[in-house]
Length: 340
Length: 287
View 1 (cartoon, helix red, strand yellow):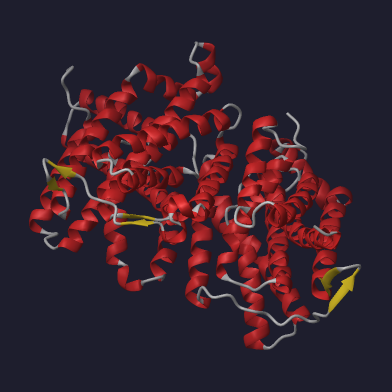
View 2 (tube, helix red, strand yellow):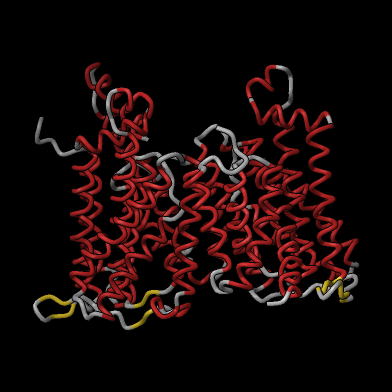
């Protein structure tokens, strides 16, 4: 029983295996493989936003700002100081995490829920303004170009395929890390605050401290995703900190499913592929995304991934027979409801 | 530096501040009554401006007829905003409503970009003479703007304070369940709240074109400024939003003149963050 793989992992793992095979058979040209890289990068950003939305039950409208900030930090280090992107990959989350710690400390001491959403929006837009205006450092509206790709033993990871596998490996590591974090003492503490903050405090969970740390962790993770973006697409500009990307991450989390590990991964794949598919519609596709988001929130508030999980479970239960199996199935269904 | 420059910036600040006031009043009203953050408020203002451009430039109505028509139509659209993007989501968490209004704002913004393109559109002003008042240059259109803003806010204040509808609205904002218990039709209150707020947003839109041009991109920055005002004032506090809106407008103009034009907008967020640090409930909020 101890070694049982958590149920979500089967589905997610299978999905990931399929995704890993995709560039070999389906997405064979460079452009399409670039989309795959984008899926992985958005998935990591979505996972980090989901840590705030799913685990903390809070919302940050400044999340894209941390994404862009991580991208700028790593790009800046590589361009100005000639520091290897590998160090940038560490420096970006460190910097984003530190800033997240500071902002989290300011914002989370008193504000929760709606207030927190607006406060983080303010910080995000402030960061965007600075990126746009502080020309000598950020390059102004056109941003920074020619960001170098990372290299391994003198070999630049420049091809889409290599970068995809590299990023996919990191994504797997992050999903694993997150799954461990959820069940750790810290993760359970964060969840307990989400469930009932006063109760959590009364049993000795340092609510604000935990939330500030969790927020900072999510910021570090999204900063890392930003650095991955910068070194692959090889540019950064102020738009990366703006509301457009915030909206993309939101779609990724909501469509995939809040509070589920694999949800944002699936959501990211859906978003990137559907938006590519709708490319011919040009500007109209953003209107369509708005409609889609509204419909998803309305009709599938739990997201696609949990809905799939439920479908798989119920079909499995139908094949089983006997009271015991039904009882177990009911328990599982209830647990599924509780996951939300 | 001369007094004329300061006077000019005070007037410019008053102009911007009036728009912030009327914009933030609607935002704050919706939050105060419904505990809903309407992320589409900025796009409603934008739509007001763009629709005015359409009815004056393409249909050929005069400014005043067009403006009145647009405000009425947009106010009625507020009913739809409530029924489509707010009411179905009220049972869920507060965040879900934010997301649905984000979706609405995204649709409106990108839909407008498709319809009107991203370029700024000028609207013919009913009159636009430049008057010099003691070294300060003032356009007659901007005087109209300030006057209408104050009239609208005064009207809102009178409505909330003295009419039966206003009392019902305040009661609903204070205690939803209690209001229902004493027989207030809170659904109707929610409808009218969004109708009034959308009307105010559209009014801001038709007034903005008196001093600048209409463009699909004007909503987002205004929304963020509106949030800064609402947060500094204390969320849901309409009266506070009026005072803070004016203060922000004036100090922002002075900041732009004497400190840095580049970081003008940044100034507002810094004020917001400092206020949050020192007084998280806002200047006029009570804990």
